[in-house]
Image (tube, rainbow, N blue to C red; front, side, top):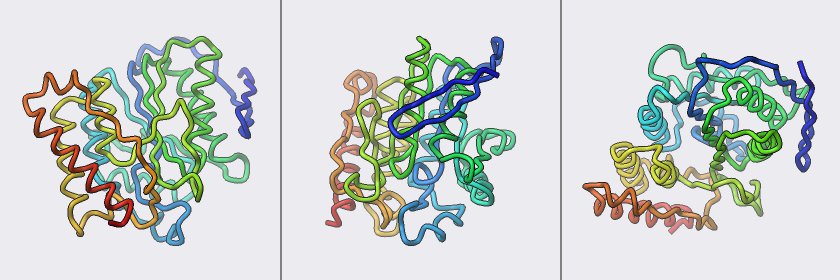
Amino acid sequence: MKPIKIKLGCLSLMALIPLLGANSFAAKNLFISDIDDTIKLTGIHSNGVVGHAMGTTNEFAGMSILYNGLAKDLGASGKTEYLTAAPGVIDNLGIDFLREAGFPPGRGSVADFVVSGRDAQAESSGEFKARKLIKIYEQEKPELMILVGDNGEQDIDAYSALIKYVADSNGATRVYSYIHHIYESAGKGREIPAGHIPFLTAADLAVQFAGHGWLKNEGLTRVLGEIEYDSGTGQFAHLVVPAFMECASFDAWPDLSSKFLEQASNASALAGSYEQVKANVNGLCRNE
């Protein structure tokens, strides 16, 4: 084992990187997601965090639809994994959540695609995730890594550590980091720095994925339709913008790709649905 010392801002860790040979089964496109406050309504910094964390059916609206669409469109060249720093029983609840909410993969045990096991007394969540991400990168050496996390804890630190590691080692892997804007940076959350792409809902994250060609028309249409409906109803709006979410200042809505729209037979419907999503969600964020 070769010790690699990594320092990034306040993050300092000893990452042990296995010296592995080529992995003929490595994924070409690797998608890695956090769970709590990224796809699961947990409210890490909310007063009701215990109640949220113990739930196993509280999904941010549209995220399982998006993740399944992405897994389908990446096909055999893609792999979906989940990286959680939740310790002990909370880790098991995360696995139950993924299974009950129907997140990919659709076959086999979802537990086999969850990277966990942090010793909370030995390392921070950021250190744990950075160590695991670098190990995964060295094992897989994919062409593309898509990372999705949130700004409530240390995902930004961990993802920055991986980006720096790949750059310093002259790696050819393209790394994209998407950060769920859950809390305002002036309050309980982290400011989302350059190099990381903010998102607010499954809808604008799907727009980003479609713009890169990772998500096809069917997947984008389904996600936009889901969020348009949920955000426009009193019954499901809390699954789009839960009470603990702080998003009044969010203004980073991405544009629909003109190239994507040129090829879409339902371009007008997609554009209209997305505009309605933005209006609905902005209203929820500002309590209008």
